[in-house]
Length: 160
Image 1: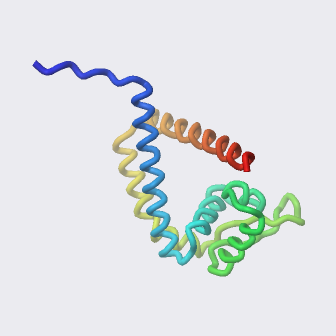
Image 2 (image 1 turned 90 degrees about the vertical axis):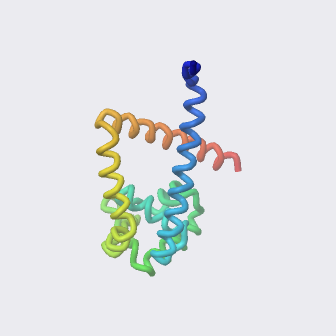
Image 3 (image 1 turned 60 degrees about the vertical axis):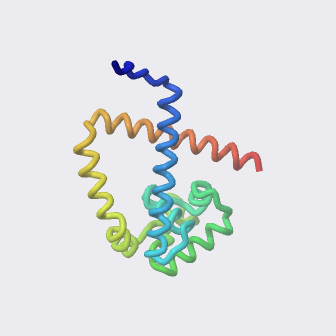
């Protein structure tokens, strides 16, 4: 007779979750490496484009903080992204002395070719596999891990 399955501890489940989360991050990095190559930008430049797009525009200082780059490095990123036509500087509506960065329609056209099929696959796979309540719980998990990651990035930055 087969032994009954042992219920895993919470710590074991958390270890599995952390492992899968790291695998997901590594897969995302590998995909982004290929995407950056197709877009003709560096992986750092692509990460900055992603930050700008997700924020729906932001200032250069905010980009530096989010990307973990120096002000000088961010200036180089912005210059390169403007040269390839994927980002532009626009006046900040709240303070005309400052600029904001936004992605361009050219970036969205190129991005759709790369990420459009994946986004469609995400939508169909996740909508078939999970309920709305489960998706909301997953989103809450990701928000918690994002906040945790931000906290520890600040810790590392402050320890330099």
